[in-house]
Length: 188
Image 1 (cartoon, rainbow, N blue to C red):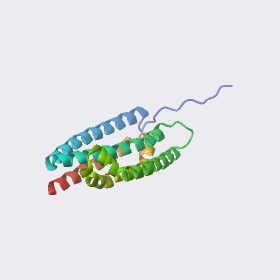
Image 2 (cartoon, one colour; image 1 turned 90 degrees about the vertical axis):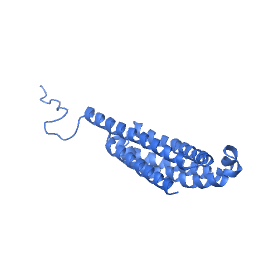
Image 3 (tube, rainbow, N blue to C red; image 1 turned 30 degrees about the vertical axis):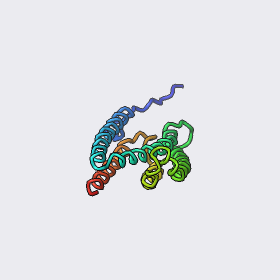
Image 4 (cartoon, helix red, strand yellow; image 1 turned 135 degrees about the vertical axis):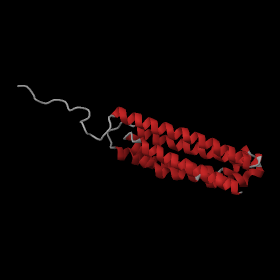
């Protein structure tokens, strides 16, 4: 006896869902555009900052940005793992696991970094920069903390290859950051 079952076409006429290829191309274009604009705005912020600050202030700011960036980078590994993990769990479970792990990593790293900021300032910048570096780290270390809140939706959307929202949110974040930073620098 012969089965009358045939494979369904990849997309039906009038089906609003994009194919995997179309979704990947759209995601790559959105991600690439957002990344390009982000890099350009970072250059604008760097130029504005260099013009507004004294050299020693720029050095302390650079140290604080590097330190908070390292904390953020280390914590982001859990997000990457949540996106690429191939376990039989749902996308939501992967996103929740990545968020919990990132939260724990950020809690430990931010606490240790802030508690050791005086020692870090003495080793890297000198005793005179201790207060400024500690104050800057007190502000900049909120970035990795706030990134924990964005971990769940980012993992979920990336697992579903819906990068338009992720790219748009990243672009909005950079525009707001650069706009506020340049405005604060110009106002003094």
